Length: 100
Image (cartoon, rainbow, N blue to C red; front, side, top):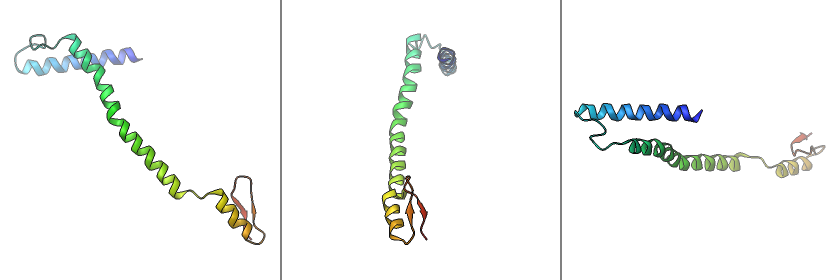
């Protein structure tokens, strides 16, 4: 699965380089663009995308953690409230079964 995708991306890169340098009337080989250069671009692109998205992933995880910490009702607090009410019980999961 990876090899066909890599070959397709490689071909697209080569065609892209070829069309850009065709504008100036030279071939990629004449401009010094070799197979190694194209392969370097092929490998470096996913690495750079991963490195760019890594801080965003950390920020998203941090925001989810902060929202969870702010909005969660802790079972101990809920059970304490249920026990203080007449007839209130608390289940094993910590949720109030009856507060009347």
